[in-house]
Image (tube, rainbow, N blue to C red; front, side, top):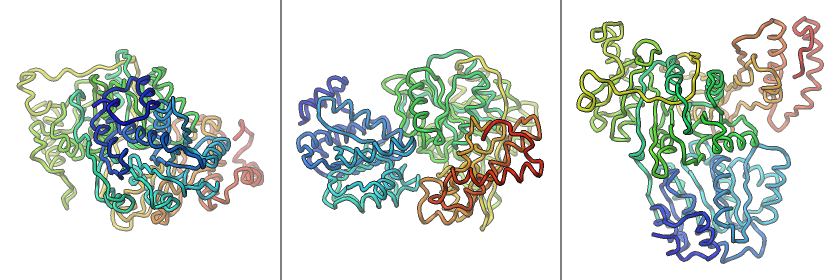
Length: 603
């Protein structure tokens, strides 16, 4: 179905024509007419299906017809990340090029000027406000923003917002709105918590389900079964030859993103990191450079990369196996778009085998398995059953003895140790079921190659998973809210840390002293009821090479003071200038005791 078959205003059709939008996607075809009728909708659709246009076009059409004579906020779109907010705003600008409509984007980060622009935009009456939950709450509490005239509410990626702990914030924002409104909610999945939210905020909604349950067939999916210490060596081999295509590497936490990006840069790769500790201007610069091919490889987490919509991504590399199989679908769905072929690779360690099976079960197919041993990165990795059938197996949970079936197989293979004549037996590396028919008995699947001459630095040692006893206090090193939420959900108390700000090899010019003082042990997005589970913070100093004891003292003591104040000071009472004044007295004590003999630079 074509857009010009819809009852849309000429101004919008002209914008679509200029953007070369002609044929509707399935989600647009099923959704736009219903929204134009004025009905509430709960839609199940993933990134890349065209859902943004599915709700922006009918919304623009309504706003264009009705106008905004009272100069009030008429519509609100709530999204989980600032990147997605910016992306939606860009689409609005294109679609409404010929329409006199205004948008205001509301998200955290930046400076005081950004806050004032957002505030004034809403107070002056924006036709469309696109906002992240936390920042919207802040404006409602401090800026006098009026949402009592909102006629249209849209929740995009509602499942992600609930996973990030924004449920209470969403309900609080809605409490400022009139009950009589049109509400549209999109989610990649429809678990019970989403349906419960829908019952609360929607009125007799139509349901549109266009979710992509399986990856695009144009995506070539494979896996390297490896040890943690082998991952960097595999990357070295994969990027051993130049390439023009873009790559996204997904890692499990923002701290690991920082570490991995740093290591890959030292290997000579053209890499940028995307994480929440960057200032907004820096994040925008990273994305612009990636889009414009100034940076070939982007390292990111699921949460930060959620709103990234770039069509020419050739490879998605899962450095860590995602905990949720649905996240795997989201990740690899960023390649193989617009009719192009895509390539997805996942690194699977011994600890990840069960989760890898769960992903294959969701896809109802097995991935091609490559041997890390062929790449000369160490001994053969752990085993994956070459005859595995995703339709037959259930996800293996740990038994009371704490060993899954896959781990028992691995141990048996190591004990037998016959086939390869080494201590590891017949380990990884075999292609999936049906390999012999495709390749023959003596032929292994050829390994793929990717660009850039590099030198390897093997790092990041294998993590060990353990069964935690009741009452355990869990310590986090980077404050990843999704991991914190998982620990809290299991009944554990948490001590939160951020070791990026305590890396003693980084000068204060690289990691500003104020960053340490600004650290909040209660992560942004954590549900109010769970905040009491955060017992406090930790301050773990770490490094690789610091030349003198004096330098260590200089890098260590100021940061300790900053973290200490962050631990015992309420966020609303924190003042960095006042802290610097108090620090002068502490400096005198340090110098008296010989901890800081001379001032090496500034902090």
